[in-house]
Length: 158
Image 1 (cartoon, rainbow, N blue to C red):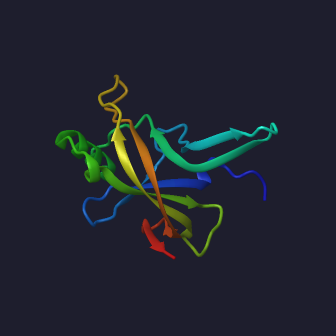
Image 2 (image 1 turned 135 degrees about the horizontal axis):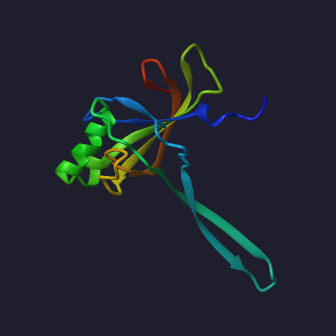
Image 3 (image 1 turned 45 degrees about the vertical axis):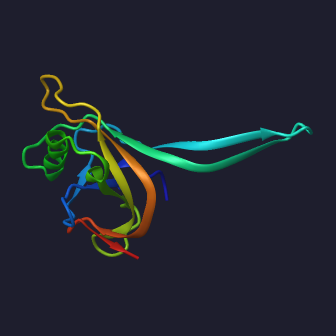
């Protein structure tokens, strides 16, 4: 298999409220979406001059900027609700699904990993190009593997 085009790694965020899941694909207006891994690295050098490296964890984040508000978008409603309600703590919790579109399972179903995450709105307003609400996704590391149906936008664990 040759080089995989970026469009085949899809990112969906749960824009639903409460127990209702409503996954929306991230990417419109985004030229780049790169989850960043900040590793917790401990380096030790012993008296023999040898170095040992211990990577104990990662803090994963992804900046979604720009994000242009669209009135009919469930994600916009969720973000505006965070702003209007000054929401904090678990009210910011959601799920993000990374879908590997280059590995078809069956029809419109693909392998996926769902991860718990928190939304941090970094600013709002913007310039004359439109109302913007850029945000950062903070992943918790609580993951589950499964499949994602891109047509029905549903995740199935397993």
